[in-house]
Image 1 (cartoon, rainbow, N blue to C red):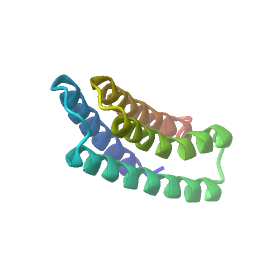
Image 2 (image 1 turned 90 degrees about the vertical axis):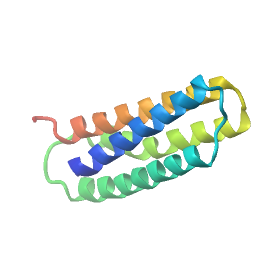
Image 3 (image 1 turned 30 degrees about the horizontal axis):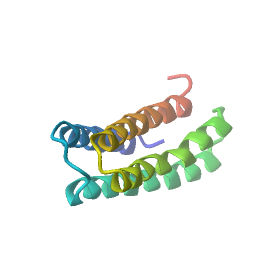
Image 4 (image 1 turned 135 degrees about the vertical axis):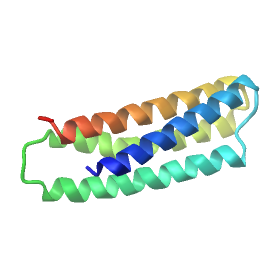
Length: 120
């Protein structure tokens, strides 16, 4: 995996989560600003998925391939699903789900790096 890409994704996850937390505290609903950050995060996650599939296919070393691909191909669905939920549910708890999804995506990306570099 490209560590700089993972770092950028984690930074955007933190920004997304903090912004969603501010929205939750202020009892605001999902708006264009948060959707823009979600869109940037999703583009980065899709790039990460493509890079991960290509690097995983070309890898000639030992790593947990099924777990790696499960994380890699699942993580792009988490944040958009939370965003869709926040669009449908106009409550503070919907923004809490968005905060949770940002946290989960960041954890998944960290775990992908651990799987990719098992002996580091």
